Length: 277
Image (cartoon, rainbow, N blue to C red; front, side, top):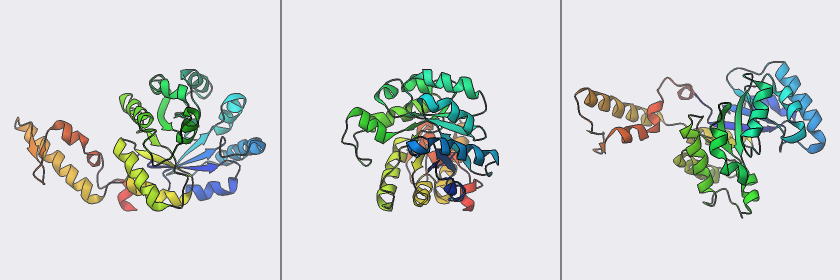
């Protein structure tokens, strides 16, 4: 199962690494960029390298957000042993080429769309063979665009949909939604995450472990939803075998192939790991 939650952890706080892995997040991102003070960059790099050298635990993806610019190559060396790297402020495929040339097949790449130039070139970035997924960095993007940005607002909807569209068009991981800074407001987090899920995002970044359960819950269909969706798929398959292209679901709604494909819960089964939680 692909991650529903990506928990960002300051890379200059190695005391939090193990706690992050145990938080219930599907993926942990050791953040050497915005999460680490500039004066602590070298220490953060050493901490990440040492922790990864011991081998990170199974069952949780571990990623590293690296710094662009002069620190990039040293950060990439320190990230070896992780599952992949988040590359921030990608303005075009050139930076992806640079990263891919150094890490080869050792690290997967998630590109962060958080500048106006990166948004304009999102298709070139997402279409690069080395890119595994895209995340929208809404605070950086809002600042670059000069917006009075609010995570619950619609100002960045066009940008959000562009990231979702590029991710789907190139078969990447479902797009990763931006973080919510008001981490103690669970209701706000749920409403915002539900809105992102409705727009086609498949996961969301978290900045505190308290956010993880809510984000995981939003991106996890219930057992009843999965059972209903699978019943629709089974009914549609049976109809197709008889040469019938349109069915009625359990609620009496008419459904054709496009509507059946629209049911995201049909991609899951009751045997998936999250039903054991």
